[in-house]
Image 1 (cartoon, rainbow, N blue to C red):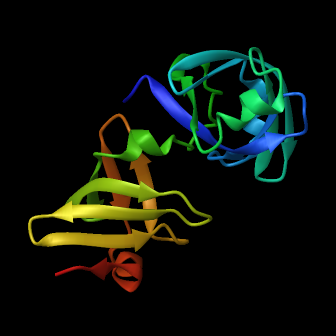
Image 2: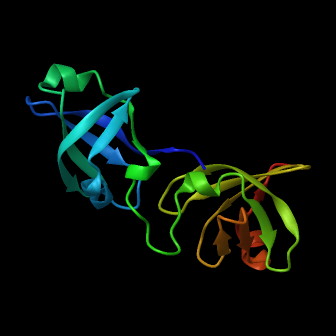
Amino acid sequence: MENTLTVAQVLKPQGIRGEIKVKALTDSAEVLSGIKRVFIDGTEYKVYAVRPAGDCAFLSLRGVADRNAAELLRGKDVVVLREDAPALPEGRYYLVDVLGCEVVTEKGKSIGTICDITPAKTDIFVVRREEGSVTFVAADGVIEDIDVAAKRVTVNKKRFDEVAMYDK
């Protein structure tokens, strides 16, 4: 588990007063409303205001007073300390916590270790195996359980085989 989480990416300046438009990398841009400070390129910014808008949000940050200052942040990641991150409801996890988990079938047979996750409407997981890698989408019924503490993701073998793409 890391001590920071990337929660958004700066898309562009918004207006002339330094507001920035960000793409939320969370389930909902509403989650960003609870954040009081962020880090962009290693610099800490106090969050003055957050206006969620769909899967994006508009942030007003201390020290970003005009469009020129906001332009310098374009394309950069918005990071928060884990201790400042919003609490997740039971059964929800930050993707970074799932990286490195062993993937096993419901009968306990090991498939491999999660080495990459592409966030999407249906997240895409890449599992490293001795024989190469396998990519699968987290479609309905594929993942049965995620135990972050035990570093284990249990999948339904039948559904997994229906969506898995093997590279070798």
